[in-house]
Length: 149
Image 1 (tube, rainbow, N blue to C red):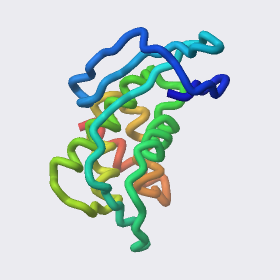
Image 2 (image 1 turned 180 degrees about the vertical axis):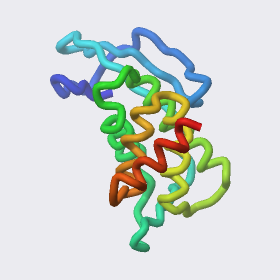
Image 3 (image 1 turned 180 degrees about the horizontal axis):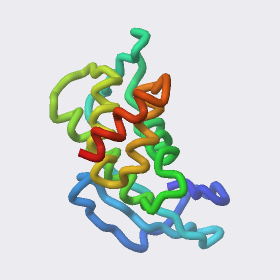
């Protein structure tokens, strides 16, 4: 495994843990050159999932893109990176379990919002405001009213 710090091609595994909720393995590694530590994740790669965007364009599902969006919504909130990773994995697992090769972006957004609502309500509202493209304060308030119920 290539070191993210110095680029050396070899490292040793210090610790391995199976992450049941994400069906992956987290490995703690140490670079053999610079001796810095880093984590890697291994998971089974399934058939590629294609996302149909709102404008009709199609692109391959990008786990990192989804994680970045969630991280942006959770910025300055008490939500750990591990929790965000878990959320992305749960969404990805749900999509793969539906056995569809193509999925609309709206479906992904709804799954993320359902998960975020359970994790952090402020992050949920932030994500919803971008995802649903609130045009005015009234639509924003309607979403807040739903959340309060």
